[in-house]
Length: 129
Length: 486
Image (cartoon, rainbow over all chains, first blue to last red; front, side, top):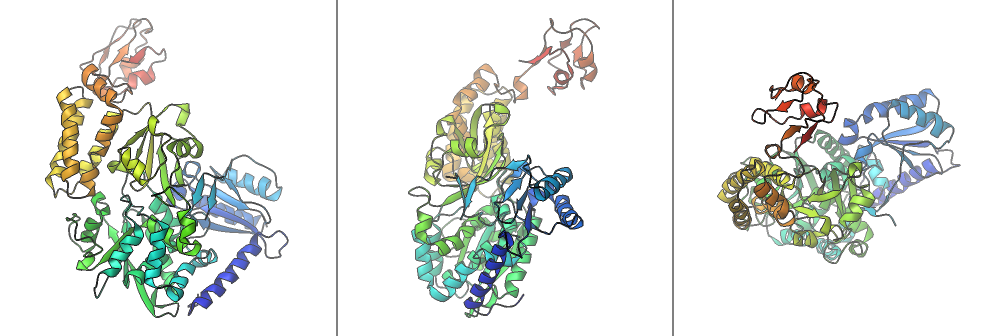
């Protein structure tokens, strides 16, 4: 990490990161990829999200599916932990609840690979500032 | 329109909390950059005052005003303190913010330092939140490395650094004066206000204490403008509030709704209603300092003032939902037990008064209550409220007083009829065997841990009430539904 010496360098870094993030989810962008977010706050970890995180990371690379797996904080759906959110390039994010290894496998094979609709989707009911 | 708007939780579940780049990509530290280069401290405080942001820790004191008071006091050193000593049973919004978006708190504290003239920030966090502490430390190291914390922030010459202080889990240390004493290495006991911490706080220097959620709101207000923030919420409570939904509700979790949302919308539309299709009985807000809201409050818009008018309070935002299986007298007793345990013991109304309240409630739940006890509860509760030193004591009788107001008939049943309709108070119930249904299989007798059940094989059995400890083992084992609770 380089030190930001001025507000200008912060703004420039932000623009660069924004463009990079936008490219991630654009459909026809060569940089785009599948984004997998696993909730890893205390509540998620306690319900078993760490093995799910490891599983997604390992299995996606083993099965040759390019994806960016990252950990995020609590999404607020404590009752359904572990939860994971998948964003396919060009599409809206979809959130799954009660994810275990079996469910994770189903998500990879059916939802990500074949684009099928599968059960276990949690409706998103909020706007973000 | 979605019922929820996420402002304080805007980045939770969106960014990787251990990557500062993710935060910057979501306009992180932009508010700080603007403040340091384009705005005077007075201008920032003016924006906050106009936004109407009030303290989210429970009291609801206007944040801008607090910042202004701290700014106006002359001193060679001032401090910014973030209160992350979240202690209400069932409340976890501060933990979620710190674990999901630690940079927003760091950014807001730095802005506060610029406005109040402080160069040092302290986060008082419970040691029971190891993950939050770890992520805060990671975040602090990253922002130092990028020149967003420490000396000469963003090349502007402004210096500000943050340190972490650990709380040992005392509930009273969420009260700001007690919190400050705890940080100084003294006993976590509150002192009389004034002087307020803004004037004389940590090490006798002016100290601005704000809650995690309050801080998390600040960067957005500065990025999006006070007009935007003030357009959300009710007349005297602006913005949103995070609630931790817990108890007998389907969708346990965190929600963030605009001030003025009704309890009905929160519980039934967002929370998915009561578990197992049962009936809603009450919602406890504000933890041990709050009170119970009932069916008649379902359509009251939730904000600071309406909750106080209803005999409860916003508190930190815990919302525990109860159904018909919960006995309100037992609930009041549960919260009192918590307060008795957590009272620091400094002032007598809280130390002795709460103990007596707890004893009277114990007497009532055991079936020994009298009408005199009910009057005593009310009088004593009012006295404790009026005479206690700090917020803990001043609000500790709330669970008793509000259940007395809203569920008077339940207290009456306990006192007069010696009955507990929710079948919670063990002393007031009896396990009985219906002779007609009992086939004398002896299963209950064999499972009774205290040998209270007798009877011949193939004959109706009988429970000796003197011996029975009301554990319910017999009822669970009986295959013929021959055992009932009276």
